[in-house]
Length: 241
Image (cartoon, rainbow, N blue to C red; front, side, top):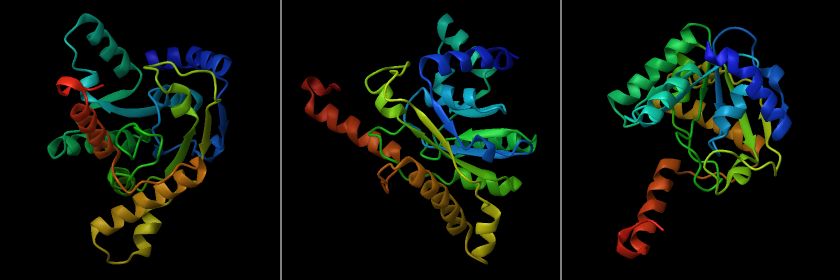
């Protein structure tokens, strides 16, 4: 309900203030399940992308964003749920399965699932190794994967918590849908892990081609962890700088 009410005004504000350039939106199927796979450069990606897309986009969000006990935190969590952001635990194991289950529910209802294959925001503006959940979800329901490249949001939001600067202008490029099932068939009797990695890499290749980002064969979460540890090691008292 809140999503439908807020989308129009939010879209208008975004277009007037930040003037994002959206291209290729007609490549997103108008009906049926779709996995929208995007690079993730800034907090604002999760607002700008679904605001510009005509169809309702359901995103998976970190569960700790919903777990605050404060009144403001609880209100914020409620608002995020109303905006189609679903809380998931990223701790791995059964938590990862719960995230997959939440995503499958959206797709099986014929909806659009927004997902960031990198698993978290890029800490350095580069494009990191994709996690195979995007492939699992698409193959489970035979849904097309539409790659999306967010360009400029990392630079526009550098050093800011929420609102990006007006410059550089943020660009959103939508690529041609990827048929995950066709990739799986082309690999014949290959093991599941091989198929999932092949599909995921095809998605990341498409995003990289559109975004122009440097590719890194390392998970973004691992890079973040290493940067935090390096900061703690070099800061007085073991604190982050």
